[in-house]
Length: 431
Image: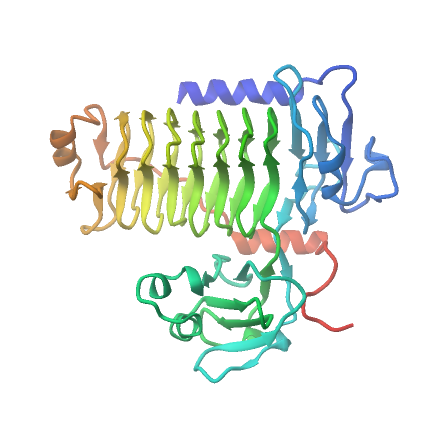
């Protein structure tokens, strides 16, 4: 905990200290900005956040005011060790002068639910949809967990069931026929889409850092992307994502083929893969002080993402695993609370690690403390796992303490609606 607090203070100071004299500070205000402005002051702020991607360079800082931004930031340049490139959400309006509210980046668009008609299969509704390729479907009036994509469902991959048959048999699923440009959905309760508020995902990432170095992202709320809320992608290095909230995507925060990425103090939930994911040789990935819940996996290192650090995270109520170590060497895990993850608290698949002073707590008898898949070794208690592996000698089972409060997505949705919808209208509605 001491390490996490020190890191948090250090990075708070980093964000607050101005960059070099030649650096530029930009402002984005959805509620009061205009894209004809120069973006250099709160009074001359831009309205669209995507403007930042093409103009920011090393040493620059952007402050983004409250609003719902149905856009992406795709950075064209990065920072340097001496002059980071920094994106800062300003939900209190301290820098921008806006009234308080969420600073939300959404990958989804609202839908005119009346476009659907009943399909032959029970519970399935379809509509021609040429507006854009659909990357996901979400009911905004529910948990906002994304619908299952039919071609990614177990019934299709393992059992060979056709996509439309998957949709027919599985509430909360969809299939988008890219050739016919037709969308098929099965709502969570089988009712017509018009009984729900539905949005369709069209953007892959909220903030995309491809190959850039020394980029810091602070304080945003990101939801419903085809891939990740924040994505440090191939060749990115020394990226920092801290105090963000990211949900309803494939990954909350992804470090894919990037190096020395720090993911600190974020809240990551209801993503259909992982809360935080270090993959494809993302070496030196550090997850510190994050809360990850109701994802498939909470925090995951895979595919030679070696020399990682999992410190002081709370990984709870995930649908499969809490902490996952898959084909990854030399992960250090300390001080994590791993609680009530449905299949196992720890998953190890051909990986090496050093773990101690963690806390494990099962929520059901059938859950495992540790699951070593390829070795066929499963441990229902910490004592059994400790004896077999010689790990976790200072760890404990049970008594992990209170868990973080979960985000009320409906309250968040109402807050954003009061600020204004943002974006360019309703998908599927003819004007």
